[in-house]
Length: 317
Image (cartoon, rainbow, N blue to C red; front, side, top):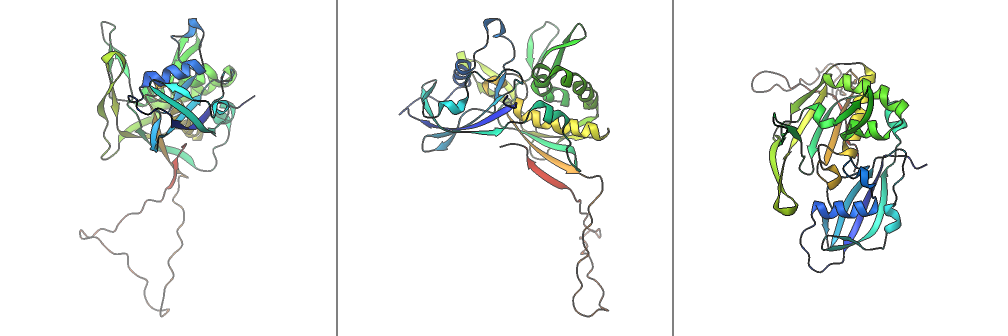
């Protein structure tokens, strides 16, 4: 069985001479053709997500990233089988030139494997496409929500009769597609641990309102920008669950319409062992009795502080 979630990076060549820009609904239509759902499941959350839309690389080349989230049902069409076969996306005729699997770790490994000596307790999350979040007002009408907190960023789990029946986002992917015996205890750990995750602004990357022109002359409101999430307490198992959530949020996307390419994010993590690593003392030069060099002081008389942390970089892509 193919491990999942599975992510592919696709390079496509545009065969159309002239065409209007690629729209989210065009991409959604193509993937509905590749990976159709049963009629009674059409309104349910998709088994796949897009990490944005085909991005121009120049010379009619486009880059696109797709993720299949289901742990039990393989994708009806493997994008690798479509290399050389032009695919219609709106007015564009895009021929896949190459398809590379860039992530294929099973939920079992992602949720249970050891994370090594360094614990992930902080991460920067930056939007790559508009992120659409909505809440319902007193009348039941959906209104855009542009103040993300950790629970909204990681999605939701839906329960009925004491059991998990569905969900959305990162935790929803586990609830819907990971093995039930694995998902339920892990979700209990995660949903309790999210109370210890704090949102911190990223300087110069404030969350801001974004508009995206959609089909039928509609404008979708969302937000763009960056923020930092810090795990301020908890045990090592909470830190490992936090790291798994950060992996999942890049795969599943954030908010609504992730199956249409909205909600794509980049995650940069910072790990810490809990103690600053030792830094070897600088070698002294010249006479043995010469005093060591003094650390230069700032204009205000204070000495610069150095924080030693290990930066792991982007999780995927």
